[in-house]
Amino acid sequence: MDNKPKIMAAKIISIKEFEKHNKSDDAWIIIDGDVFNVTKFAGLHPGGEQILLEYAGQDCTDVFFGLHRNEVLVKYAPRLVVGRIEGAEARNSENKIQTRDEISKIPYAEPSAWQGFASPFFNESHIKYRSQMRKFLCENILESAEQGEIDGISPTDEIFSIMGQNGLLAARIGPGEHLRFAPKMIGDVPVEKFDYFHEMIAHEEIARLACPGYVDGLGSGMCIGLPPVLQFGPEWMKEKVGHEVLTGKKRICLAITEAFAGSDVANLKTTAVKSADGSHYIVNGTKKWITNGHDSHYFVTLCRTGGAGMGGLSFLLVERGPGLETKKIKTSYSPAAGTAYITYENVKVPAGNLIGFENAGFLHAMYNFNHERWMIICYIVAGCRGMLEECFKWANQRQAFGKPLLHQPVIRQKLARMVAETESVYSWLLNLTYQMTILPYDEQSEKLAGTMSLVKYQSTRCAQMISDEAVQIFGGRGITAGGQGKFVERFMRTNKFAAILGGSEEIMADLGIKLAMKDIPANAKL
Image (cartoon, rainbow, N blue to C red; front, side):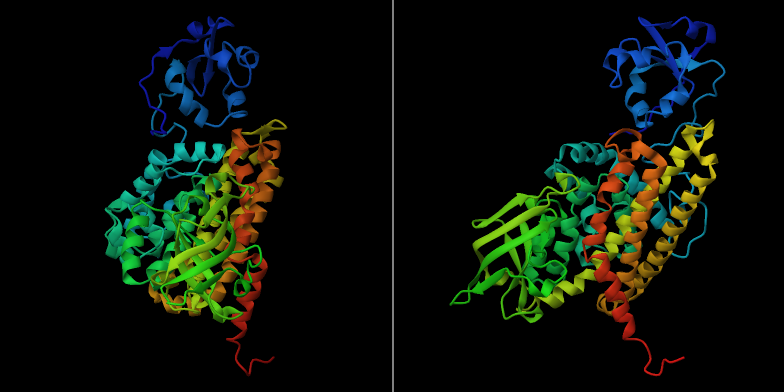
């Protein structure tokens, strides 16, 4: 799909000619210098025929942008524009309104490296990767994402295949040997040069789709469900499942959370009892709030194989089959995420599907939490940045009390707070990501866990504030599921997911300080 309005060598229409078309049966209007013939369209206008026809023969640019997003012009302009009014500056790449696939020129809408500042973290490969990733998503995913978000329809097999064939699924798992499963990489990044900053960009750009439920449906469950297989699974499992999932042929999710055990993972109740001959396990229990669970083929399931507590848990790769059922759970974001309640009733699982060591599942789960939390931070900070862009645009175009909102000191105070909080968290995230590029994976778990927890805590606190201020800036539009404030409404309704998933804010704050306490010198006294 091409999201760009065409820059046409438009026919020049004189003022005198334009003013003739001011009747209900012959209605032309001007929007941003372009002349639209809306005579036939008026009857199809979602806001009603009369409100459109009353502007026949007039320039209604301010009125239009007070009610609509630019994407409305992208959709309708090609068949309604009849020319450009005389005196209007000719259309060119500099004066056209930016589209979704371009790097934004709005202040703070992009990381500073994309707004003319030097960066010690990003190089030319990263610059190219973001540009190509954004174009890829806009051309191949955006239209389906918008429709899927509204209709609650999960991404299709075709979408997963497109992502797999272009290396996007593999990129979301990060650097590593699994990148060999990708036929090619967006931006032509050599797999040996692919780093956590490339992965960070992939997560940020997917978040920019601003379709929270559909975005989770694009494989958030894979991002946390496949790593245990790749890190601890037997070789046959790494090859078979890794290839199937990363090429988009199969889907996978992580099944840990239960109605009985959320943050208290050590006390989950789903059981896996080994058969007398040791050839298989019988799994019984339930899992709840499992992202992508309804659409998955594989379930990386944490079960109780031993005694009580963390020492009795194991990971099993459970394939969809007899005894395993999934039901969608209605949440505050789109059903496109495939969030599921899972029941296991005497599910027979081959003993060879054990991931890692028996009764070592808790340690394996903890090993992956750092990366999961980092991924969530990338998404939520990108969402905050998206809100900054929306608010700057709206405050620039919205007229109130005779001038744009941006001229009101109270609005500038809100924007200042939003910018300061977002950029502060992002700077902390950049430092963490840099540490990830130089530390082995096991050292990351040891050295970064506490800080990662605190950054996740701060990022979701920031998101809550950003959401609150954005809704205030947009007013009624910020709580309307459509139109100019639709992205603000979505962010308001769904940002709390990040404050719960991967460890709640309270757990993150406490864990961060508890781990910091271990490093306090014994002689630390005033």
